[in-house]
Image: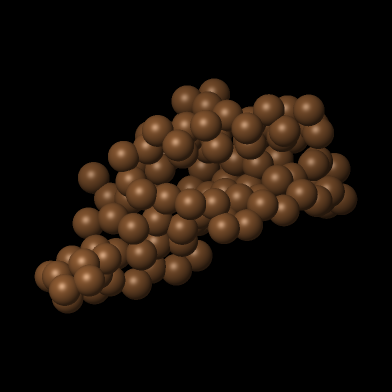
Length: 116
């Protein structure tokens, strides 16, 4: 399974089946989440001795949309789920905003991973 499929399997239950890769369907009920791969670099090694250069560094962005309380609760639940994820990860940025086009609050998490 690739890292994005594993990420979807991790967050979709938290989002009650409302997690989407890249594109959110029209009229999706809030709260929902959209995620995408921001960047991926293959051949990373964490071995001080050079290793086999077989890891990949992938950055994933997830945007959670909904009412302010829903977004806060879902972001908290996703952060808890990330702590138990088998893929090494760290949240490098968290940003809150209001999206006037959809009239919803948004929390964005930028997640860096290292994985085989």
